[in-house]
Image (tube, rainbow, N blue to C red; front, side, top):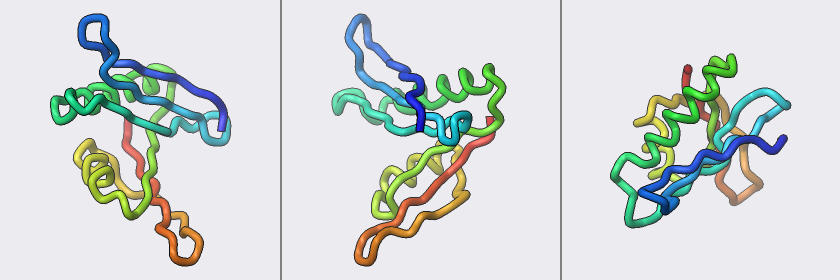
Length: 107
């Protein structure tokens, strides 16, 4: 993975959320992390960050945006599906551990 882009959402001058993109195989954009302050969750900040990052990736010529989460992270997976991501791959975990589900969204 290469170091990618960081998108920040702010409220006035205070940062309230961030999204980090890494590039898989040097050119495939993957949302590596999304964080929103507790007091700003469920207010559309995460969606705003994902949509903005998606537009930025589309302007750079990308057609898909990827993300991933552990299969035990049902809340995160539900949120990603709600934002238009669909499953596209699975990486099994070690025995006794959850695997990782990969999802993508057309841009």
